[in-house]
Length: 443
Ligand SMILES: [Zn+2]
Image 1: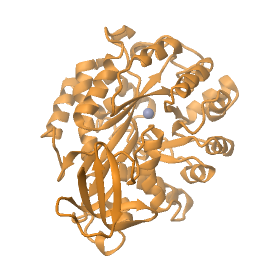
Image 2 (image 1 turned 60 degrees about the vertical axis):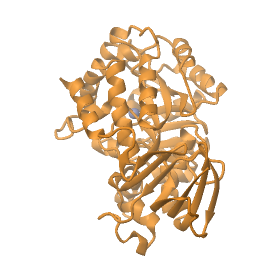
Image 3 (image 1 turned 90 degrees about the vertical axis):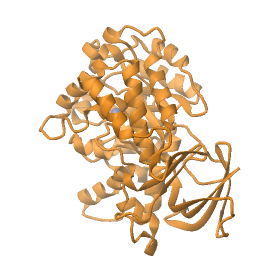
C-alpha cells in the first residue's frame, strides 16, 4: 500500500478539494479521503493532483519535424510530403529510439496514457518485417520503457485516394493489402497490463467503403476502441461527396462505424447533420487544437458536439508542442474567438476532457481519482511563475487556463512514480535523447 497526501486534488466538479489522501495498492487506487491530517508514512504531493492526462491522438514520428515546416507558408499537403520523407527512413530501431524519447517528453508533460495512431507497419516497399508487428512492438516497448501506458491504435490504410487508387511510394509501408490481412497482423500484437491493442480506420480516403464494416465488427467483437480521422480538411469532404454522395460522417454512420467505443479525430468541418450523427451515437471526438491551428485546418464545433452528446478528448497529434493543458484550454478559447462569447465549457468539463474522456476513448479504467480506478496521477506545482497565486483563488481554474507542461512535478502511472520533482526517473536527459534520435533520422 502506498499513500499520497495531496495538498489539493481534483475529484469532481469545477473546483479542487484540499488535503486529499489517495491510497494505492498495485496499480489501483484503493481509497480516497479528504479533510484528514496527513498520515506519517504518506508521500507529500504539494500542488494540485489530477488524474493523469490522456493523449488520445499521437503520431510519434512527427516529433522529428517539429520546427522544420512551421515558419513558412507550406500547406497541409506540402507538410505531409515532409512528414512522409521521415516515414520513409524509419526502421524498428530508429522508431524505438525516437518513440522512447518522445514518450518520455510526454511523461514529463504529465501524460500517463497515449493513443498511438500507428500506420507505419512494414519495411521499405511494403515488404513485411520478419515480425510483422516489428514497428508496433518498437512503439509499445518504447512506451513501456518511458513509463507511459499505451493504446496502440493499429491503423488500417489500404488506398492512396478515395477512388481506390493503389498506395504508392512510402504509403506502401502503411498498406497490409486488405482488411483481413490487417486484422490477422493485429491479432498477433503483444499486449500487457500497460499495452492495449485497438483498431483504427485511417480515414474515409485511405480505407475503402466495403472494408469499414468488417473493421468495425472486428474491433467491436474484441471490445477494442476504434478511431478514425474525420473531416480535418475541406478537401476530404469534397472528395467524399463526389465519390460517395455523402459527407464523411454520414458514410461512417451508414457503415456502422460510429458509436460509444469509436473516436473521431479532428471533426473540424462538419454540418448540423454530421454533429447530430456523432453526438446521438455518443461517438467521442478527439480535438488536436495545436496541430489544427498549426496546419490551418480550422476550428471544429466543439461546443455543439459536446451538447449533442459527444465526449471531447484531446491529442497532441503532430507534436508541434506536447502540452495537453494548452490543447484543452484551446478547445474553449477557440470557441470564444469564433463566437465572441466566453464560458462555453466549464472548468470541470475541460478537466474531464483532459482525463476521463480520453481514458474512455482509449479503453482504460482510469481518468478519475476514485476507488477502484487505475492509479494514474499528475501533480502540478502551484509555486512556479505561471501558477503562483493559484492557492489564493481556485487552483483548478488557474491550472487549466495558465499552467504549462513545465509545471508538472509528478507523473504516476499504475502506482509507479515515473516523473519526480520534474525529472524522469528512468531517462536522465530526455532532451539529449530526443536530440540524438532526431539527428539520426535527419542526417
Ligand atoms: Zn492524426
